[in-house]
Image 1 (cartoon, one colour):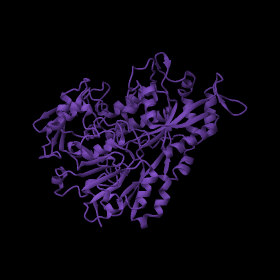
Image 2: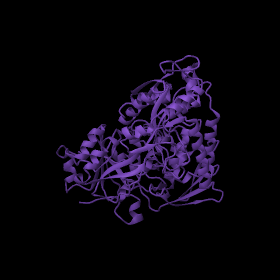
Image 3: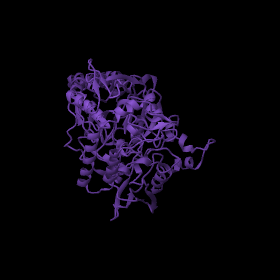
Image 4: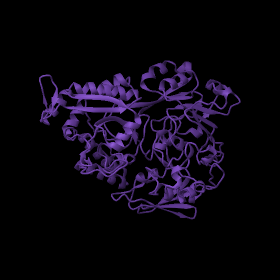
Length: 594
């Protein structure tokens, strides 16, 4: 859920596989190196051409922590269920139906008949049981899915068993998001079983080094609409249709209609904008800085800009509130830690930021101030949040109430005479965040703070967040969905994305003397309560309370919610655009017309 740069998206929580950004440009031979030629070639099979911003890091999607790898996995592998982005409803996928016991502690899934993998091998209940018991629930495999599957205060995991050709999940207590959680990808037991039964010379499961980006595409077996055809580092990923795709029988149609998907790997947004304008790409995400340019070219370029409204992602500023120590040394300078952990200090910062100016100048009016970790389009959004409108005088008043003082030069000092000065970072290469950082620096200097804003390398930033914990303030973002519980690992005090007060670094010993506040505990309790409550109206009230606490305690200072927009060629038929699913969530049903 953590979005770092293009996104770490951190463990890719349950609904993330639903949102596809499809891609790319094709070069299958030297003669075909002009993408415009590919699109115009009448002998080529129907294909979608779009763009992605980075290479996949792995084809072992159980282990994936980067966005591109997760997107590749979403193309290849389906789960028992899926979520319709337009309705928000959980719908059947590999499972044709399910039954829930009266006490809501057993869910039994019936698979569709005659399912097959892309290599023609039957897909059975054994594959489902293998996926959960040997992969997701295996303590020797570091996957974020295990966190998603933990239930209740105890964090107990479900029991997964086979009943004939059905699969039964037994859970310790009612868990409202469970049907959505089982949208997780199902993996082929006949290909991967040996890798979890054998270890390498270092004593690690062979699975951990299986399905790397060097694996021949034909070895990557799929159950979705497509299979992997080719991957060339720093150039492209190519998919072709899966001849055994399960939905072919369901609708009695030759799905997918578009037989080839090509993702061009282009790290520069300027480059892929140029490619789209030249006609080389079928679609492109529309960023604020070039919306006006593309809007003028809609008719000439034979495309339409779709606006799904506010995106499901969040952008925020947060301070390192961790009061723990490592080897006796505080994680954060105790002087600054006192500031950061003072709620009036955080509220003052929230009031000092001019979000309307960000919307107007940075997002070109294509967004709105953000107030909550729950998307405004979610049924669980709390519309009663007042948030923090721009009020620098209110900010100064709160600081004075907290014991801070101003000198004759309007510089801010704490009660002990320490100048209020701190580092603010974001990831290099994200123009929007860089612009926000510059404005935050300016806005906070206007209330007397000395902010040292710098961008740093993405991998270095991740290392600080999860390893050294050497950071003071950052500007980043989270992805999201309709279901609040998809962010549980952010809000549970020991969650692996509780970044403002993380329990322990990714590697190394647990921290000494870490303190968890009462309000952190209360938010965590509400998330557990919200997940076990099955009545939707009661769930809304629970998450509304959690949002109110977050708003008051401001561990995250939310910034701007941009509109999610894509430009898509008019010859793509069947587009049902939404902020949650984008333009290609129903890719297998889309057609390319002349």
